[in-house]
Image (cartoon, rainbow, N blue to C red):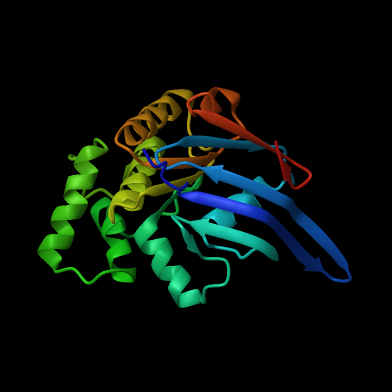
Length: 226
């Protein structure tokens, strides 16, 4: 049986930021494969390169040199419009600070992604957002505003927003960082379910207990991985 190609394949990735006259090497000679359906945690101290790596994986930043294949497509030098389309169709983002619009209901926050992607009629858009919110346990909170939701509920809305276009890849940046232990455990249970359903998940975390949910842990240090 022919083995499928990795969903993520990095080769010799280098990222250098120019801060005045002194270049800052954030990533150095990073090569990495992540298989479809894998759950990977990235750990490292502040400044080790883990956030830069996640930004490159999410097509939010470009490497200075090297190659990035996303599901077999070289996205290293694509123009911004094409990258935006890839982010919308193929990648779901979950952030530590939830990034919800405060004056917008839970269901409207989830629907927001449609405005940046495919054109969908209102009823279809509302139906899809409702289904996803039900899946994350918020059927009775759809019309609530972020200020009326707990931290764990807000993160569930953020996860629903990440899932609404059914992307194969989920990137999470400290998804439990602003949550208490009980809410964090609930969110990780949800990530485990998404992984069991076939999603590829790459998660940055500083918490070893959270990282243990992953199949594989990658450590970053001084811009390199181990």
